[in-house]
Length: 357
Ligand code: SIN
Image (cartoon, rainbow, N blue to C red; front, side, top):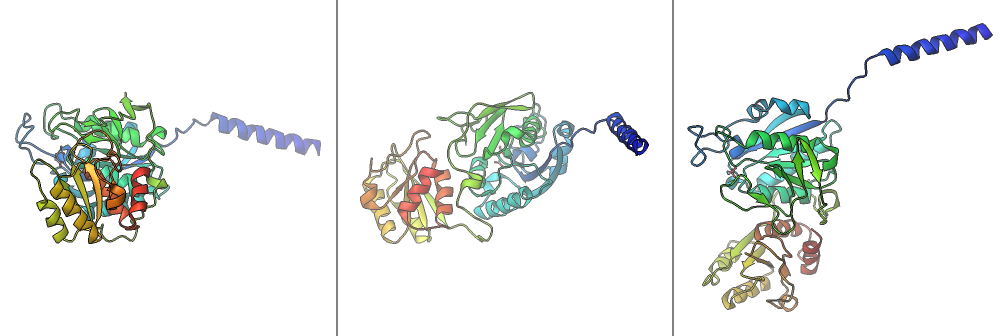
């Protein structure tokens, strides 16, 4: 009995030593999917100094990945070409397709995060839409470039490297959709393009960056507070189209032409990008009151890039049954209103959503 016990102990120790002698396998790198949609990051110019007048959306996702071999050091990447467009051609139908694809991919155990390459012109809109409809805490990062891939000092490769490193990082989990450009990390809700040509164009003017990329690692400094991704009530799984919502821009003498045209076109909601604190001219006010009487939901936003529109400030929103956009830009208020209208037409409920998201 004792001899058999000894033999067992010897066999156990031999196995333990053999296991210890095995070289340790490094943990596999996270798998990050790159979904390419076009834009300047995939653009080409006639010469290496062509930074205006180039053609956006000409390079495919495999070439974008091949141009940055260093990606393999931070993640296992694979690519998918979802669209190949300049982002001025992005549509709500594209958003729905993209949102559903992101949800499908992130539901898979083998996908740790998603990077979306995108034209910079409407990048902030796609980012906010995804922030409201993606049902996953895994990292989702949007990235673009201001210089085409063929330009001297093109910003795309480093931006893509940072975006993939961010999407592969544990620090990015649960933060909602992020925008990573020019070493900055911004929240989808807060960020906006602030300069037509500068590389350092994406900013969160009043609220600031969430963090910075430093040597391929994220350093976060704050958390965005508004509800996003898994905490929203929006579900696009079976949604075939978004309700039509338009934006009317106010300017001196703008009158009511745009508002009336949108009503005639059958919109379900109007975001009025008013002056100042969302102020309405006499004509715009009358047109919006008529629109509301027809059941169209009216949101008072402002064309000013900073600050919130005060409820019952420049208009009696309670009496007029209007909603205020908080501090959302008109283009982001339009996205939230369209999604809100998939749930309800009750303006109190919609105002609640504008306070929450
Ligand atoms: C675009 O938005 O597709 C063109 C401009 C850019 O990507 O910077």
